[in-house]
Image 1 (cartoon, rainbow, N blue to C red):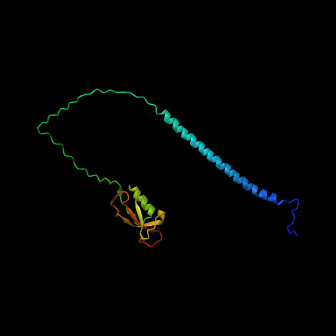
Image 2: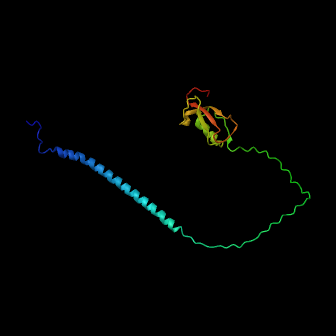
Image 3: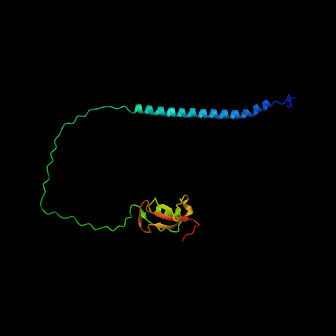
Length: 179
């Protein structure tokens, strides 16, 4: 005995399955066509760009040759006579007392400042590369400089510095510090 119910004439299960799959196939086909179209477009652009370089190279390689003949010549150098007479000594130059800043800048006081503000101040003084290190010794990286506070600095304020000389010891804002 067959326990499977017979399909009604108005209901075709195969037709339902075909209509459910059809949109999926159409979407896959449209993506494939789009991908192929994009690849053809890229190859076309690359081909045009490659051709233009070859034309330019052939048009700029033309040149003309010419021959220049130079006659040999003789140059005689005669020494200048020196005199033993006393010559006037140049006037002495007074030493200048300008206090020019070294190539770099002067280390400002940045302890208890936000790390980002401290770096900005050092840059305003002419040094664009400073280093920072975790003062707790844990070796944490200072990814967001505005989340850290400077608790120590090397060198002391007022010392001439160059790129990389400034080392700032920092802790995260909210951690125990003297600031």
